[in-house]
Image 1 (tube, rainbow, N blue to C red):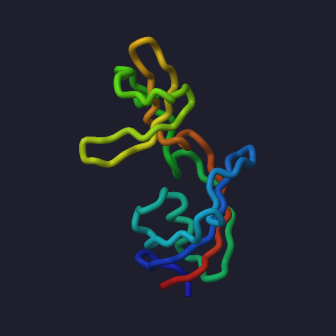
Image 2: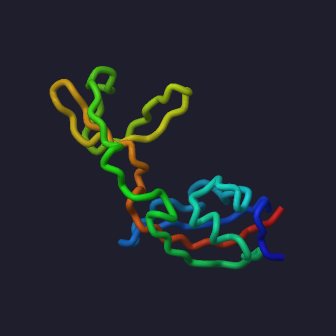
Length: 139
């Protein structure tokens, strides 16, 4: 029975960058469960599972527009250095709190004398992503 929008499914997957670097793998944290076509995941991944069946495997290649979008230079901001953890270093990913209490990952690009330059782009923005997907179950 092929997957259709609204089905709750479970998938195993492996995500790699163009150079073969693994950025995520369900082996590390178990199968991924989500509702197909609901927008819970990046668009290209969400679209790719529609029509697949249990046990079916597929390799997909997603452009940035199908994944986390292009890198946006407007999302790099200078902020006061105050409040930055003392162990912070350039290149480090930190959690930045939002007004609603949520936290988002951000990369420290530069630490100046009284400011820090932080990149709020998703870490995989601007990258082409490759996935190997296997459908485990449809509930």
